[in-house]
Image (cartoon, rainbow, N blue to C red; front, top):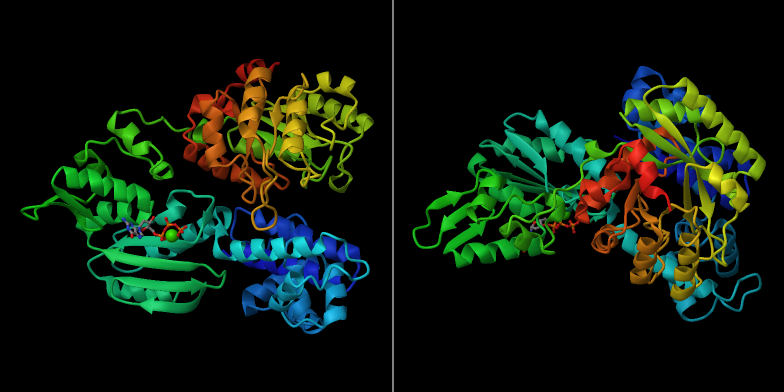
Length: 571
Ligand code: DGT
Ligand code: CA
């Protein structure tokens, strides 16, 4: 699947065009196309083969031709040409979170920079702050941005790594000699970011499989090519390790390579106390060396007198103690989800009509979706005025009269303004079925002020859910600090739910805060924050966070039937 690769190229095109002050419509077109590609659930190469590229939202004739060029040649002439026309340091600087095309150009013109490293030195030496047109905090922001960029290059969001892992295991499954195959490591544990992808295969004839592995289409470099262990670096910059073991060791190897390391160490300790040794080949009697278990993960847990522990819980965070007592949570599953509580339509910045969204949600088997377009102050996202909101609610009521099996909830995503007030005429709120509120600006206010903003929104008797509470965007914006204990307390007192935003760059609440929310009796809503229909599928990432946070079906609002949901969120 090259969807992300092409999306990244289009995003970069947009940034490069911006440094040249090109036509803003052209720039926006590239961005829209990239967003659309990122959220596709189908492989772009398959779509191209079927000749239906232009049916993708935001892809017209010209962009379709460009996609075909990338697929067939691996390159894009327009991109190469554009890149050549700009000094190399400018695109590198634009990649730094918080550094826009204008600042990059300005810095380049002043210092004729050759690399980001040079820029870092200048910022550390306070050589930038005295320039005209440069704000006081720019130096600090540049350094923070460079740090963030370095970190984001070390770990890839699960939303990108998981489709790659699925594709690679899919391709290898049909290689000669493959018996069982699974991805392991942090991807199997559904950790929010991933350093490298681990794949495990059982076979008694490993060589042809290894040869097929290092020749897979995404491979850029072969780092190791051995008989039972190989490693490659993909074009996307992520490493993939493949290990091949004998069938009798499948369970032991899967357990070992799924980790986490801390979980494994703890299990090994339990085995030791029983007089047994546990490694990637099996469980063995410490004295006789006789094999006691190993073919299946289940049999190993059973041997250790533990109930089976789902991969998402394997962090040595109390799951082993719980498994010993038969007290593991019965984790929420994707199939328990009855609806999506955070979806945008073309009324604000979404790509589709409410009708189209309803049809897509129906296909997923949902009973309801809440269309939560932005409110007035979010101008960049096409926020709705009061008059427009009334029209939209009327449209939703009309649609509900016509469709069967699915209810569209009239919702809104309000902006929590810098003083904690909401950007809407409150008289309109009782007309809505569900009200979501979130912070979209003023991220640098500091822990206390940000906490107070959220608390004052929760105290509003119409606000049902606080969306993406920490506003983090992986790779470009860190979570701001909040006094979560205080927020959980007020959330419970006011019956306000907190969202797990399932958008792969957000995953906010994260696993740790989701677990704390449950422990403090706060309801959690999982919302996909869909802007393009394909993103409805991101719900799976939100469910993964919930599972990593030990959440059960009863802890998640949108596992409830519609009537129960509406009753439960009432304040
Ligand atoms: P990451 O950093 O996202 O790749 O995270 P993991 O958990 O995939 O870590 P990785 O790829 O270094 O190793 C894969 C699994 O192999 C890990 O989860 C547990 C196992 N493992 C690796 N090194 C050790 C070790 O020294 N001892 C034990 N017991 N297990 C290990
Ligand atoms: Ca790994």
